[in-house]
Image 1 (cartoon, rainbow, N blue to C red):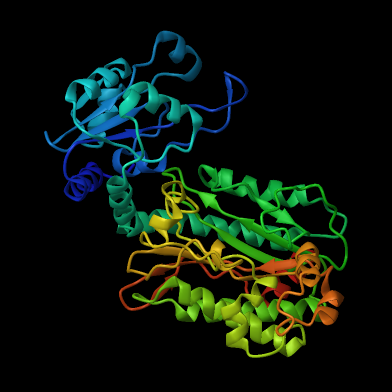
Image 2: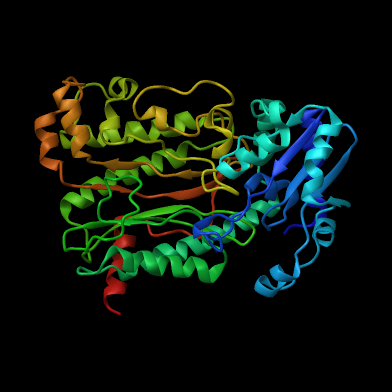
Length: 458
C-alpha cells in the first residue's frame, strides 16, 4: 500500500467534495467459483482501495463527514481461519497503516448507520452480494446511489497522483513484456491457448496477474473474443489484447496485432498501415483541454481516408464520419480511462466518468466511446483504434441499404473474411501534452516483422 498520508489526503479531499452525511464504502467479499471454499482470485473494490488501501475480504468503511472521523468495520480472524490461511495483522493494526484509528466488528455497522439518522452516501454496487448488504444495512433508506459521491469520486480518481503513475507504469512495463512474448512465440499449428497461457504466466510472475481476461485470437473481428480454442494457420493474423495488474491493483492495457507467418501479406500490410495511421492521428491529437471525442474523430477520419483510398468508401470523408458510415470498420471507441480499473471507474457510470454528466451519443459506433470529455493533466487513457471486417454487420447494412453514398458494398464484400486488428498504447496527459507510459512496444510493420523473425529463429 501507499503511505498513510496518501490515504488520509484522499479522504480529506472527499470530505470537502461531498459535504455532509455519512459515506459508506463496502469492500468486496470472496466470490466462489463452484462451492464456498473454492473462490476466484480476490479483488478488492477499487474505490475502497483508493480511500482505504486494505486488500482483504469482508471489510466496510465509514467516512463520517459531519464528525470528521473514519471507521473500518471488520471481524478478526478466528483460529479456524488462521489454520487455513495463516496469521495476519489485526484489523486495527492494518487500519493504523492507512491512518484510521477506529475499528469495529461488522455487526456494529448497521446499528451505527441507523443511530446516526443522517443521509448515507454510497456508490453503485456491481456485485449482487453488496446489493444485498446495502438493503440489509439501510432498509428503506437504501434508495439510489449518491450522485454527489459518484461525482466526487470520479473527480478525485480521474487525476492520477505521482505514486499512481509509478504503479501504472509498472503494470505497463509488464504488459509490454507479455506482448513481446506473444509476438515472438506464435507459430502455425499452435493453439491460441498456448499464447494466452504464456502471457498470463508473465503477468502472474510479475505481480497480481492480469488486469482483465486475455484476448488472444485469430478472430480479430470479434472485439472481445475470450475463446482460445482456435489453431493458428499460415495466413492468419493474431490479435493479442492483454494487460498486467500490480499488487496494488493498478492496470496496464495493450493490444498488438501480428502475422502468424514471419511477415505480413500485402493485404494485411495495407489494412495494418491504415489502422496505424489512425493510431498516430489519435495520439497526435491528445493534449490537455482537447475533448477525447476529437481524439476519436481524428482516428475515425484517418480510417475513412484509408478506406476511401482502398475503394471501400466513397464521397466526402467528413460527411461520412459525421453520419457514422466509418463505423462499418470502426464500431467502437478510441479508448478509455485506465487506473485502478482497466476501464477506470466504469462501475460508476460512463456518463459521469467519460462525459462529465452530459448525455452520450446514440449513433452506432460513437455510442461505444467511453471517454469524450476534455482531457486534463493527470488523466491516463488508452489509445486503441482498430479496423474490423464483421460479415454480419456488412450483411445487415447492405440489406438496409445503409450509407450507399459512402460505402461500396461490392468492393467491401471482397474483404468480408479479412478479420480485424488493432494496436493499443497507454498515455498520460501532461500539462504540456502527453507521455506514452512504459517502453515502446513494436508498432510499425518493420518493428513487428523484426520481432517475428527473431522469434522464429529460436
